[in-house]
Length: 305
Image 1: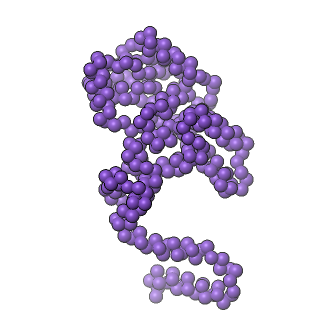
Image 2: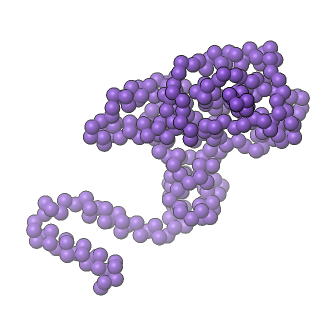
Image 3: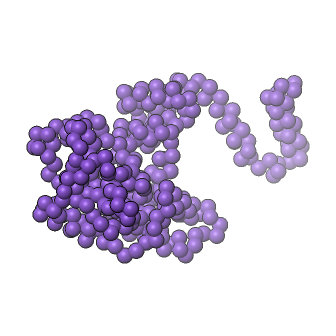
């Protein structure tokens, strides 16, 4: 992802008022759809093809759209979409060559992304997955940092709150933390803790990300199925989980049924328990006995005996 520009004082409300007045006064024009470029920043959201079809039928029945799309003209003269992804898709489905658009000029990357993410957050059918990514975008553009930098900051905050960071976080990070709290409070969506929890659950296989984006699967089930490394098996598991509407526990049981080798984890669990034992605090003869047994286990596993 491209580096976000340095944060400047902008107002999305002023732009929204400009867009509203332009729409009301019909101060917009038809532009060629083929000339409209997708945004250069994150543009992830699942759109139901059936919903696009229904929108196209509505547009055809009413002979057009009620509100035009919003684009911006870049310095090199190219046109970039800000608002109206679904409407553009519907127009393409109707094989139309042009679409009504409000063209904004001198709009910064920050203003454009802020408008885009605000619009995204206001979608009624936004899945928790897409909402999470939209909120990360929103935080990023508000702080003037990249998507990846927001993730890094959130993980630092998490480690700080869990007492993992020995030296704590910097003063700059503390200010950013308080700023994130304010930003999320203003959106009225979720808390910092919830956002951190969700973000760490978005890093799953793309097939699972797609299911999450559609709103068909919970984060908990996706985390369970992400243990499946074979892609074809994962596809089958996702289909089954969606068909049966599995809970987290049901997904775990299903996983055991298709991956019987998972039973071997009981040995891994036992080794973890051994690792937690403070062997050096035991009597010398017991330490020696344990060392002998562990050595023998390795020899058996390596086929030496």
